[in-house]
Image (cartoon, rainbow, N blue to C red):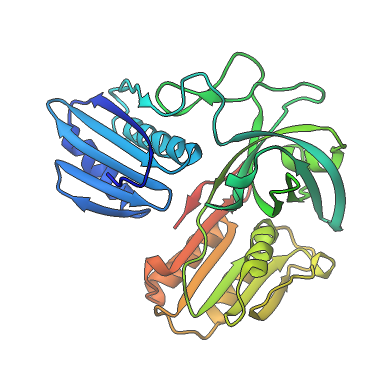
Length: 361
């Protein structure tokens, strides 16, 4: 393994069909890293480190290596999660040597406190959260999972490291979790900004937390994660209001000389925001004129109407409702023949369902 990756952990997992599980795991990892080797022994290089798999007599030995504890823990989690997914009937026992000690705090967890809140638009509220040691959250993904108390004035338990490398939960009330974008991060000040869409309804714990948040309120945070932009001559950024914080941050970080078309679906014109960028920006607001989210094809139709060459010069990023994301993905890959490596299409939510949807391309 790469000698420049000093943090390491390994495990040997007994399996009925080691090569079959290795093949499925390799096929999954090829979408997220660079795989090399043979069926019996392969290595995958990710942005955050490396993982190696070796088929032995009746088991697979995995070794992972990374530069920092968060990346190492992510690799342990990824191996364990997918081995259990690909061999569910076996319920394989996974015990790691090295890495974070089981029962210890997760290296990718922080306890945060609300500093202040302000209204950005009628339906978007920004909370500034404070915490310690936030440098790792400034790179490697701009999304975090916020862990919210299920009841007012009840502090939930926080996850710890399990012996299998995944999250483990002590006894007590578990938090509700939702994924959000770090809109702004100031490592020196120990602050992040998170923008919340103020959805209506009973099953909206994030929106309810944002509405009622007061200085000193506690929230858990794990991360960072989520894919970012790849190098291209010009970019298409598309999304509804749930993706607006991510689009806003990507625009602010875009260097001068890049061309960007941004398509943003919003409830009405009152939800427009001032977005800053050094890039050459063509920003188009798509107003639903009060129609409920998830009930129009504004975003899909706007992308279909764009005139662009589907080649290596463009990268498309989109975040929106599940059905819209699926249609956008099909249009780009099947109709325009855009290479999959030139897009990242994420389903942020599903119409008619509470909670998050973890689906991306």
